[in-house]
Amino acid sequence: MTTQTEQTAKATPGVSTPAVEPRVLTVKRAAPVATPPAHAPTAAPVEPAPAAEAPAARPATPRLLVLDGLRLAAALMVVAHHLVRGPWGVEPGTLFGPLAAVASYGWLGVNLFFLISGFVICLSSWGRGLGEFTVSRVVRLFPAYWLGVVLTTVVLAAWPRLRGPLPAPESLVNLTMLQSGLGVTDQDWSYWSLGAELRFYLLFAIVVWLGVTCRRVVYFCAVWTLVAVFSTTWDQRWIDNMIVPEFAPYFVAGVALFLVHRFGSNLLLWGLVGVNWLIALYRLQGYPALEHFHLSWWSVAAVVTGCFALLAAIALGAFQAVSWRWLTVAGALTYPLYLIHQAIGQTLILALRERVPHWLLLAGIVALMLGVSWLIHRWVERPLGSRLKRSLTTSLAAVRRD
Image (cartoon, rainbow, N blue to C red; front, side, top):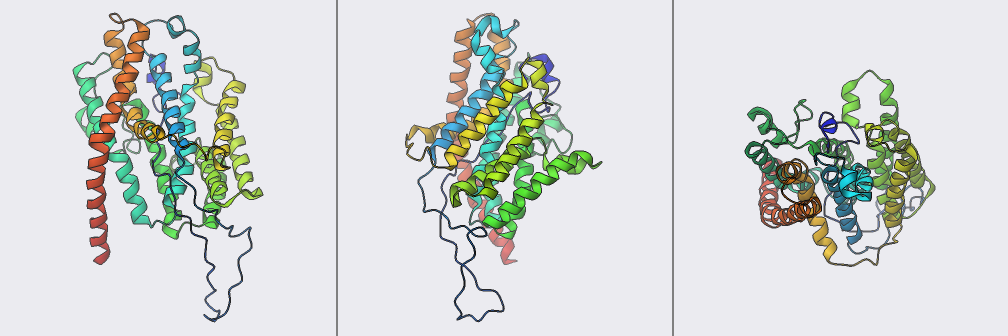
């Protein structure tokens, strides 16, 4: 959405970019206990299941801080794409040189976000029931999002240089995060990816409802892969919308890589990763961004392959020793930064590009966005999230008693 052409294609994959990932990166790892079949005597010893069916979980590992840093890197890719290639009034390459060429690939940060999302959602859902899973997603997504919508609306209303805010009914329904299902424009164009995240959560909630086990997650990944592939031949638009076939390969591969991380390597899991990597590369050829930014399929495929390889290395424990505490702060900034950077940042560029040197303006806007993101995390996400979690948990307990 960095140019007028992109703004007209707000919801087109590959032109504007995504969502963010949960911060919970630890998991209780208890060795699975085999349960006797219903017909077996309770005192009878139970034969362990074959390793291929129920692999033993690895011992507990420390928090994966590297994922926090990787999420911030993905967010900065998106920020660079939208701001470096923003509305400067001239070709960005004449202002920023090689940085503008690199920023042309920044939209792939959303693909990396979805890959990380599959990994982390599977991680954070292990051992949780459906109610707890739902509460965790609501608490993670909505407090910062509500403020992001309000701030964007206020800025677009006060300085309508980029465009004015949406009409009141559309602005208000944006607060639900369900606007894409209603065919309503996103208040900030980057919010399109949140709709894809929500659909992933809805699909994975089926596994959580049944109870998250290695076998069920593998079935889920295999079925979603096949349905996402063959949905393009069906005349059922609602199915296509629900299963997000363009981005399913990233979610599925992320989930499978978490299983590799938790249970160790096996051919089935790497087969799921490999098949979805190939499907992801195939789908890249239809991205409008390739033509718009004059990118070759080979170069874009190399970036996506690098993202898959990096998360695979994390799954195999290559970065287990990374323990820089500042990465926790980096992860905390990611989601608020994603929510506020595009429409507000481009509005500031339009307002100040004639008065402030372009490098100084770009650096100042990025620094401002990072500072505001920290304030949102500290004074909105943490306190409001805690209150919301307590209230929702109490409400669920009351519903269950009834």
